[in-house]
Image (cartoon, rainbow, N blue to C red; front, side, top):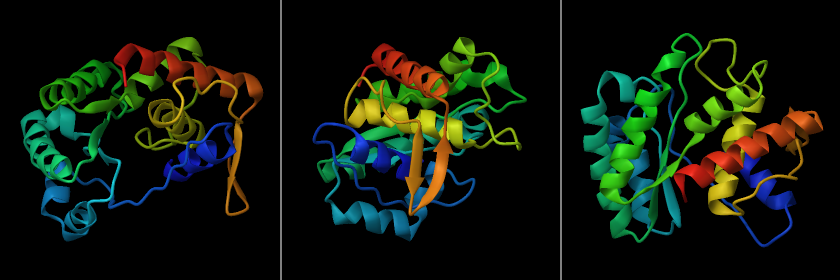
Length: 204
């Protein structure tokens, strides 16, 4: 997803430029990031406009209190360095569709407490699926994103960081010469509209 966002910013009209660095591992929590040296080293550089925090997908459901505790810890360090904290709201798994309201609340509650920004990706997924019932956003494991799901996430971040209206962006993107998403115009438009309307609802 980050490289999709970089490409969207690069091909869009305007002066938005996005550069991304990451500290990531599969299935890790905010507690892991707080205790992990690679994350602490990146934060210590102190040259970020925004730092995006994402809890593991099960965290908001299994231990919201722990998620919030370490969001507070990381937010304090981010604020010391003059950057904005952005909380990456995740989506419900295919086999647990009814959990999205709980996931959404876990992110919006701590964002309100901290004065942080929510990137409402999970809510945008739900909105997009309501707009197109045949829409597939999950990978086959029912947990991760497939290319259209990642594209929708990138559109949400584009609406937050670049332009609140991502409609009209290209639906085909390549990274290092490889096509990473190739959407028909009507499907790209639906995802862009879902991103715009969801970000409008939750605010930047």
